[in-house]
Image (cartoon, rainbow, N blue to C red; front, side, top):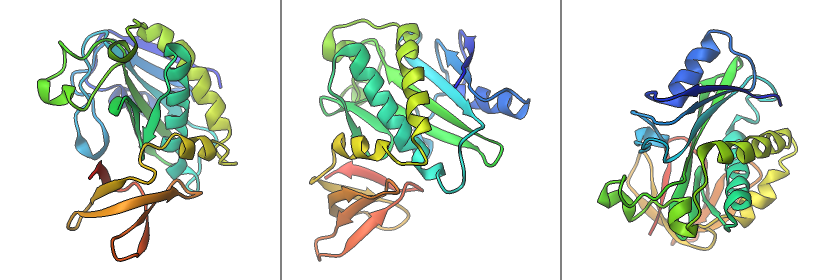
Length: 240
């Protein structure tokens, strides 16, 4: 994949800007990278805090190799690429919390948000916390969010992180139809065997995670022994 970077000092959301460029005809591989986001977003309408030059905030436009059959695999595939890139750049051993969060030391270091309009395009948004969150993040977030600097003491620039991430992403997306990435996705899961709380459209309930299937669905066992497979949609999974 050939990348076409677009650099911004500030934007509301790289995903919003990348979708706008997509509608204007931007090519496959366009990457919007911002030093700061004023309205960064995550799944289910959550906010992604994006201080100035404190992380890599980027969105990648995909026009090729995606189908309705594989769209649900794009986010977990990207999670593998992001985890591998963070480990390569920082010497860490990161895990993946289904479906779209990368964890270091049981805290979130990276989030992914995939949006788009098939069959025309998809936009993959990736936010990686690089600089310390201790001064720039609200206190309540510091309990659940971390950064590469906080975990390793290493200062990695957004540019350096992008140089590692983008080739990793291109490599993993090539494996999308074969689902080769799923083995690593399963191995990196931080939920396997854990008791979790499932929050969706109905009443929250607890279950034990027992696997991840070939469609990247989360397989859980309820206290009564019933086995269910969860797909992304509006489902949120939390540690019980």
